[in-house]
Length: 224
Image 1 (cartoon, rainbow, N blue to C red):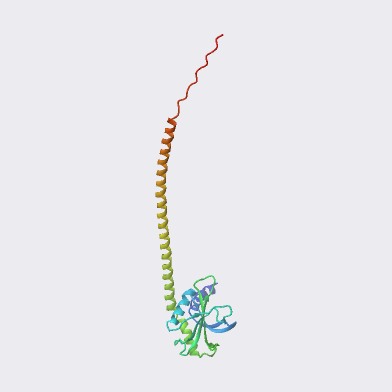
Image 2 (cartoon, rainbow, N blue to C red; image 1 turned 180 degrees about the vertical axis):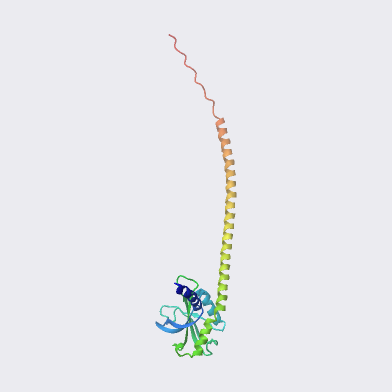
C-alpha cells in the first residue's frame, strides 16, 4: 500500500506530461495503417483544428477537408504541396486528422500528422533531425491552441449574448402584444357595459308600455 502511494504522484505526472508531447504512431489511411506523428492535447478538437489549420494557412496555403465515401483522404484535412520550413524546406502534402480521444471528455484530442510525397509516406525515410523538427512543431502548438480556445470562448459568449438579446426582444414584443390586448379588452368591456345599459333601458321602456292587469268583475250570486 505504501508503495502504491509513492507511485501515485509519478503516475499523475506521467499522465500530465503525456499530453502535449508528440510521438510516432499509426493512423488508418487508404485502408491501411500508416506511420504518423501523433500528439494528444487537453483541448477540444475544434480548438486544436483551428489552431493548426490557421497556423499553416498563415504560411499562404489553403486547407481542404476531404469527404466522400470512396475518397481515400476522407476524414483528413489536406495541405497539398506545402512548405512548412519548421519541419522541412521541401514541398510535401501535409495531412491532418483530428479526433476526440475519448467519448467521455470534450477536452481531450488526438492529432495525427501524415507527411506524404507522390502518395508515399515520408516518415519511414525521414532523418532523425527531421523527425525531431516535426515533433517540435507539434509540441510547440500550445500557444496557438490557447489562442484558438480563447476565440472559441469569446465566440460562444457572443452567441449567448445574441440569443439572450433576441429572447429579451421577443419578451418585449410579447409584452407589447399583451398590453395591446389588455387595452382592447378593457375597451371591449366598457363598450359591452354601455351596450348592456342601453339594452336594459330599452327593456324597461318596453315593460312600461304594458297595460295594467284588469281584475275581472265578480259574478253575482243567484238568490234562492
